[in-house]
Structures are given as structure tokens and as C-alpha cells.
Length: 179
Image (cartoon, rainbow, N blue to C red; front, side, top):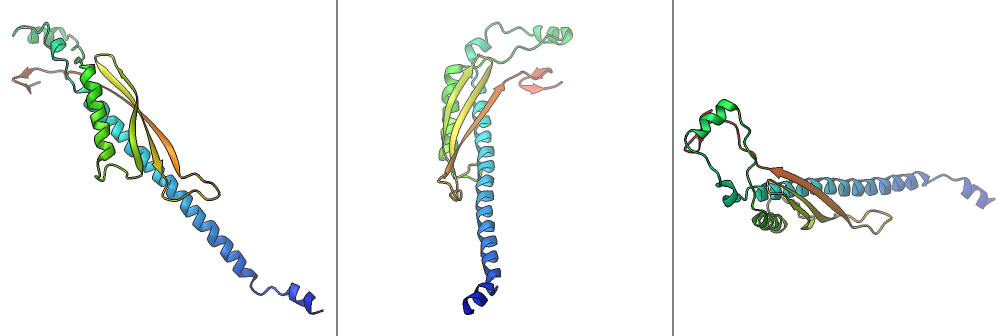
């Protein structure tokens, strides 16, 4: 008889529910922290990729750029005829070096722009056609917490960016845009 009354006794059953909710809450917070870390690291990787593409596109191919430059009369004629400006030529050999240097700077920088969870940004693809640059990057992000019920402690992130340099319309006198 005593055992039957002990089995029907519900004393302490609420503590099991509270412990269960606590475990679920902590696990959810860990997963949300990991997701937020990945999202912020992805944005940081995207910024690094965009910065590297912009740096690569600013490598002027001087030999191609200064061939066939006009005289004092060509600029007014171009304005009157509304001639399209050609894209600024890029030195692709120097561009790949500048892109890699920019990615290296982002990988080793300790400023607030770079997420410390990102481990080494790697250039996976580089395309340069002489007027634009397109790059792809890869990085691994380390989670602050191991995802509950798994052994996953990192994720792989990919980013892609492209850029080109165009001459702005207008009349330039000694490097100052007048129109």
C-alpha cells in the first residue's frame, strides 16, 4: 500500500519540467548565438571580398590607358558628340597581387571590421578581363558553442564580388570635374 501512495505522489514533478525548459532554453540560446555569429562573419567576409575587388580594379594599366590620348580639341568634341567613355584598363597581373594583399590584410587585421571567428580568407577564383575584376573567396567560421547534439564547431562561408572602373561624365580641367 505504501508503494502505491508513493507512486501517486506528485511532489517534485514540477522541478523536472523546469529543468527541461531550462535545458531547452540554454540549447536554443547556444544555437541562436552560433547563427548570429555566422551571419556577422558572412557580412565581414562579404566586406573583405568587396574591398579586395575594389582594390584590384584600381590598378591602372598605364600603357593601355595613355595610348591614343587626344588633344585639347578632343574633349569638347566628345562632349558635343556625347561619345561614350571607354572603361579604364586594369593591369590584371598587379590586380591579383593587390587582391591577395587586401585579403591578407583582412585575415590578419584585428580591427572591429573583421570578425575574430573568421579563420583565414582564401582567394578561390580570380577573373580579370582587362576592364573588370571578379573574385570569389572562402573562409571558415568557428562557432562560439558546439551545436547541441552534434559535433559541428565550424561552418564554411563563400563570397563573390565584381567591380569595374568607369570614367564619370563631365569636363575635367587639371583633374577637377567642372561639369
